[in-house]
Length: 66
Ligand code: SF4
Image (cartoon, rainbow, N blue to C red):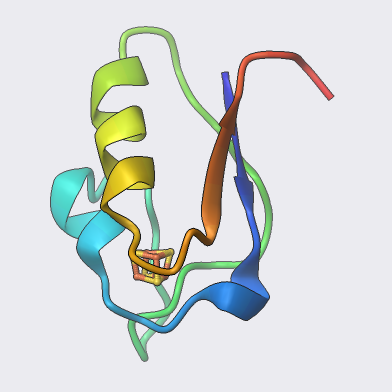
């Protein structure tokens, strides 16, 4: 499972990191870091919660390896 990050859409709400700080890493200004996120096995639930929590739809879950 992978999370596609569209950093340009991020508005720095930090809601994703509030759900799963180990998965969604933010910079010093509270914006998501550049680059897609590989979700470790067993982390799927907090990952999907974080994705759904983003009000800007900057995060997208994909199950296929890219
Ligand atoms: S919740 Fe969305 S807008 Fe907020 S920091 Fe995370 S990716 Fe960015």
